[in-house]
Each structure stands twice: as C-alpha cells, then as structure tokens.
Length: 230
Length: 124
Image 1 (tube, each protein chain N blue to C red):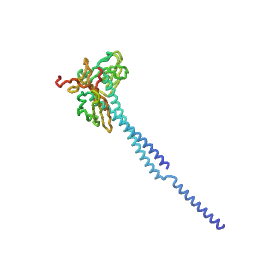
Image 2 (spheres, rainbow over the protein chains, first blue to last red):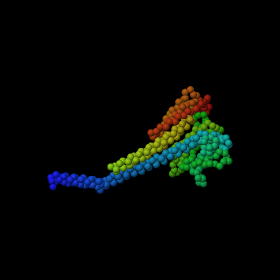
Image 3 (tube, helix red, strand yellow):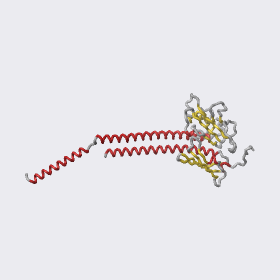
Image 4 (cartoon, rainbow over the protein chains, first blue to last red):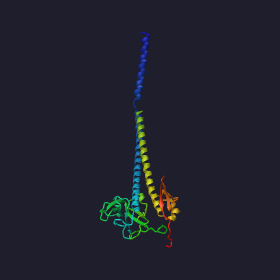
C-alpha cells in the first residue's frame, strides 16, 4: 500500500466517525425526555384549568348581565306601554263602550285597585278606540297572572287579556285632580264618573307577591300625565 | 416549534373569545343603564308637565336637581327649562339623568299657557 492510499483510508475513517457522532447526537435530541413531557403536561393542565375557570366566570357574568338587561327591558317596555295607553286616555269612549273609572279597592273592600279607561292609543287590538281594564288577576281558572290588561273595542266583544306583569300581586292607583295648578292639590285614591274631566295625572304603583320580585323599573311608581283629549 | 405555534393559536383564539364576551357584557350593561336612565328621565319629565306656568318659569330646587329614591340611588337628574324665544307660553325642557358612568339627555317642548286668573290658597 502506498503512502497516499493510506492517508486516504485514514481520512475515510475520520469522516465515518464524524458522521456516526453527528447521527447519534441527532438521535439523542429528536425526542423529549420523560421530565420534559411531564413539565409540558403540567404547564398545559395549569393553563387549561385557568382558561376554563376564566371562561366559566365570564360565562356566568355574561348570563347574569343578560338576565338583568332582559329585566330592565321588560320593566321599560311595560312602563312605556302603560304611559302610552294612558296618555291617550279619554273620558268616554266614542262608541259608548265605557268611560274612565278608577276604582279604589280599599273603599270597595278589595285588596287591589282597578282602572278602566278608553284610549285612542295604539293597542294590540289595532282599533281606533280600545277600552282597557287594568287589574290584578287572582282567578285561578284563567291562565293569566298578576297585572293584566283586558281589552275590548265594543261592549259585545269577547275581551282579550294580556298578561303585563305576572309577578305583581297588588295594584295601587292614585289620581291628581286637574285644578289649573299643582299647589295645594292632593292625590286622590279613586276617580269615578260622573267626573266631568279626566284627572291631570295617574300614578301606578305595583307591589310583588310574597317571595317574588318585580323588575327594578316596575318597583318605581309610574306617573303619567294625561292627554288633553277628554 | 409546532407545539409553540399551536399554543399561540389557541391563546389568540381564547383572547379573541374573551374580548368578544367582554364587549358583549359591556354593551348589555350600557343598554341596561340607558334603559333605566330613559325611564327615569321620562318620570322626571312627567313631573315637569304637572307644573303650572309660574313653576315652569322658575323651577323649584327640589325638581331642578336631585338623586332618585331607592332602588335607583345611583342615578341623579338635572333639569333645565328655558322659555323659547319669540314664542308664547312655550318652554324648552331638558332632563339629564346620569348614573353608572352613563348620561341620558331627554329634550322636549312644554306648552303651558299663562293663566288669566289664578286661585288663591283660600280658594278665591
């Protein structure tokens, strides 16, 4: 063997050793050790737990916010409906279906007040004149509960009932007489025809049944300034 | 490297989801406060509509500003009434209800004719 061939052989052996060493190192680095996997799993589980807790918390808060918003919407809508209907109230119905009558429950030996009024406001009946009766429905045979609006257009019509506030157990009504000013005028508990004029304003107070609660906006008295139509 | 990228994607999606839920909650809260403020402003406005001419021209302090009774003690109101220029018996009314970081203004016109005569306290 010549000296040149021997040098080439030696170089080949060195290259082989280098390749073997590199491959072995790569093989050693290709996977994870048990410790690395365990640490990774622990970190992932902590992150997942924290994420899940946060999502649950945020979900609960979102549900609570949604419930509160729906309650506010229910209260605001009911207030707006009552204000709208009573702002369009008239003394007498043009088709003689009825007249404005505010019954004082206490004076009549009842637990709760009642109000009957004709209105030109837009109602679910979609007629020009509606006679509305606002009362607390305590009749167990009817499907409605709480504050109910009963509506007819003409006397011979079958009344239609709309449940407004199911959790209401008592309706208290007061009326402000129209005397050309507010000084010295006191609210009265009833308003029965033959009053010649509509009251200046009506106050509606709702009270919940025992153990029940009203939407926040319905716990606040509703004061309605009457329209000028008589 | 792949695991890191996957975690980053999951993190970004989670952040987006939480942001969306947060925005939804803020919107719901704002809607709730404004609904309440609007109903309370209408209540104040109906109180103003009951005033006579003299009281509208000089609104009593108890009606000009104040805080609502429970359960709305976190809301307060301010009322401003000014006679409309070049108009008879017409007042511009503004009720601003503020509370829980929100403010709701309600503006309207109130027509209240000046009385020709007025009853005294003795009824004459």
